[in-house]
Amino acid sequence: MHVEASGELPGDPDGLERLWTPHRMAYIDGEERPSDDSALQCPFCAAPGKTDAEGLIVHRGTTAFVVMNLFPYNSGHVLVCPYRHVADYTDLTEDERVEVGALTAQTMRVIRDVLVPQGFNLGMNQGSVAGAGIAAHLHQHVVPRWGGDANFFPIVAQTKALPELLENTRQRLAAAFGGINAG
Image (tube, rainbow, N blue to C red; front, side, top):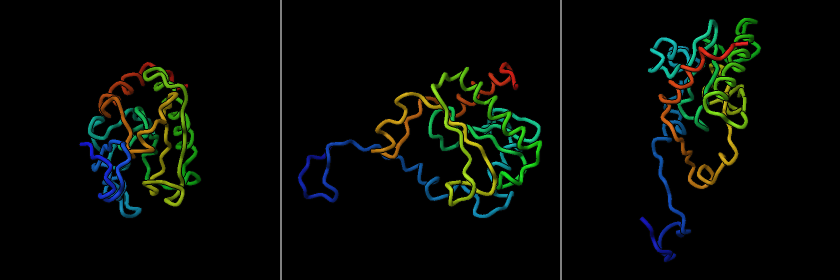
């Protein structure tokens, strides 16, 4: 619906169309996040108890796993999480630190093979003040990047256009994990 600029409506129309995404309010308001440090409410603790499809799990390791981000920045945005409910990187065991690192590298190889990105953002936000949406359970972001993927949509409409359903991306990445060398 286009409204002509009349100056009579709240917020003068600027000629830009708006794409409303009210489903994102669940994330913004924190409805999908645990309210405390309880592992009982933690989606990263719950995911391994589900089927891979239900939990959006891409790959299961010994002490850590790879899961699709439910609120991705880009297609293929995954998280590498230890199974253990631990918040701080310094509290990981040596085995967990090694596997989180190894799975991060393997995940990059898989995403390169399947989605052919031009680069990656890797990151771990420690604590809610540092931007961790779920601060109680450590998780490493692996975000594939392509030239031009930071377009006007997120800036103007607070919307990210993703070309593929999460489950379809999960299936493609999961299938590739078996064929990509872990080392």
